[in-house]
Image (cartoon, rainbow, N blue to C red):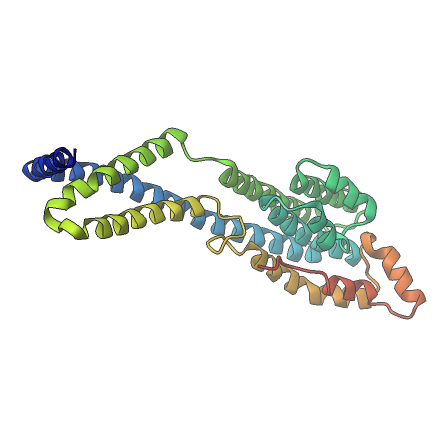
Length: 302
């Protein structure tokens, strides 16, 4: 039996050496197709990652424009402050929606920006960013009915900023929810397994005992390229490769925190914080709500 196994091994080795050029040709053909598919997938994944960063930057730009336009257009500074804080709340709500955060994160960050009934209505909504957009629209409608907006053109400008927020949110949601074609992934994985299975046969006549080491290294590189593509497909998670959108969300927060404190000192208080402000007045602490908002957590602990 041992002689038969030894003879079979020698015959197989001789066959591999004789068909060496054929194995190299087949391996090269599969390698060309495989790395073409890998490069296309990696480029597409990186494009999704880059587009996600651009869209989130557009969202921050639209929210900042809404804050500035509201302070210019609305005569009642308490309403202007409320619109500014709702714009910031919208950005954070989109962040939590993309990351599929738990309800506790919404309550932790937005409890100082919304009243308790508003927060409950937000948590009950299936599309929470859209609920906030509707709430912003209702706030501007009430302000216009009370003649608190300087003119209709400024109102149209504010509504254009709100529409830009909603449009960018829809693009972000599309980027997150659109999957890769399943047939493309399955075909690429099957080609990878076939190529890696015949690669040692093509390397054996030239490398001999070094074949397992080099074949393992090549397989590791191929699988890690596929893992990189898989991580970049959804750029809104909490992995190291994902976008730090929670850090982006701190920028509008820091920009409006100082104007909000000045408005609080001027007794221009948003309706969602009037109860806290009254409690602050009774205790001699007018800025209690402002300090609570300053201490409010802005970011995930990564």
